[in-house]
Amino acid sequence: MRTTTVFFFLCLALLLTACGNEPPQEQGQQSVDSPDITKISNEKLISQQPSNKAKDILSDYEEITAIKSVNTKDSLFIAVEVEHHERFTMSQLEKKYKKEMKKHFKDMKIEFSTDKKIVLELEKLEQKIHHNDISKKEMEKKFKQIAKLAKEQT
Amino acid sequence: MADEKKKNLPPEAQKYQDFQSKREVKRPLLKNCIKAFLVGGIICFIGQIITTFYIYNFKFTEQTAGNPTTATLIFITMLLTGFGVYDRIGQFSGAGSAVPVTGFGNAVISSAIEYRTEGFVLGVGSNMLKLAGPVIVYGVFSAFIVALIKTILVQWGGF
Figure: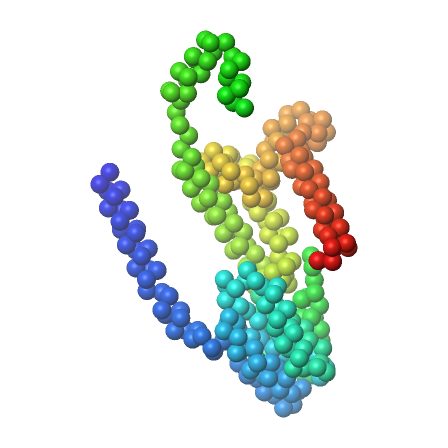
């Protein structure tokens, strides 16, 4: 009986200390108004100016933790990650961001996603564009592939 | 309703029921709930790990990773049922192991194993879905009803 009580308190102590230490670190890491964005620039390929502008606009929203965005000549692809508890109202948030983006980029076709996979794929593409690892044709092909992936239902 | 039923019984039976209800061992309801919660949670956690694995390593989005995850979980359940491990998990956690999709897999596979001795067609074939059949029937039926209600609301209500 005594050993179990001791064990219980040990576990409790471990649990409490573990929980007590972590949150401040995490908060410090993602200080409220600086989501995970990297602005990319590449003169040889298509200018990524619209993407950077979209990142600037969306980074004003506090609940967004990461924004990945790539554009071709006439379309813009944005993927965002929101804070986990905000996912309950995901569909409303998505509508809100989409509307906002459409307001700013009237002459571009906008694709918007909150899917983890799309965030990962766009991040890869962003890196490639940033390091000049990809040709214009390849980039457009990859862009189309990601857009297709985002539309898959089953 | 229970009281009404009791009144219709002969006095000896009533007496016996009182006697019995006093001595009955009470079910540890809270303990069972916690067990079910934990085991069910662990199963879902494993499912989430598999989903994340598929998203990171294959061409699946959050939307499409659900199907292969279900298939993988059912495959794991098949092995566990065959080796007799899932029965013990079920005994320990009750609904915690029956409600996730693994419980459905277990229901199909265990009856397939049970009726194996009666042959493949009349044994396995006809008895495999004995337990899981109703789940499919009521699942499909209630989905139909909900879809019907939604369609009516959208078409006429304009929601």
